Length: 366
Image (cartoon, rainbow, N blue to C red; front, side):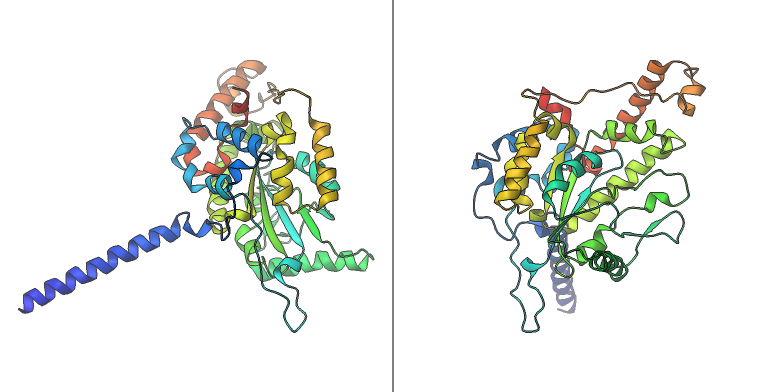
């Protein structure tokens, strides 16, 4: 009898452990990213149709990124769009409600992903465009992201105070334009960590402002090459490891953000078919009638009237060891092909680690 009781107790404990594991597994997956509201089938919205049709090509069904596609926000976006998050009303003490806080949009992309393009598109339709939003401490190394959310909040409040001191009205909408991941050239130890801290920023949602994230993705090979051709790294391998570390961080950190506050935009896509972004991005960014009109006009100036993907240039990369060691120091084209093959292979093998950033924007031309 004693042995039977022990056996039953063990079975019960085992069952509890299995249930706990399943619950934890669910919480670590996409469950916490589901939208709290979903009032329509976004895929049936005619204003979204071009965007979603092209996104399906960019994240092709036969691509390696399908290993992680369901863990991204894209399936939820197609089903529900980007419904607004409803917060509490103003308190008796006069504190602003969630929806009364300013909108803060962080452009999330690697160095070389097209921050300057998005600054050009967004600056005319935002109250404020911040080139450096006080994410960093400059007294550590060559610049380091603030480690705590309270430290980050103090830096951003300094930004608010500077604006008030200069006699400018408070910002109702803020586009954090060019704090890339990482920010600037990696020439000093630790510069790889000079990037916004999404975990800390997310803790300020509903405190200082309403936070949203504009993922600005680009063909990852072209993104890596953009930094290499500008000598942001002393070695190709260092550049690749920086891309790997950064994209892994971004994909992981964004898993703590509800999908209605994330939008995925592709560099090649917006250049080739800018008008596809007019309605979905306007809805995501909560544009009013005038902003919508202005944004459509801005996008229209980029429209060439035909599908026009950005061209690829054989950049000078002969300064890197890979080419010198292979006797390609004077062979511009041969050196370029060699490094491109190395970069493509490295990133393709790891694409499943960052599915949100692994889409190929050139696929819309196929």
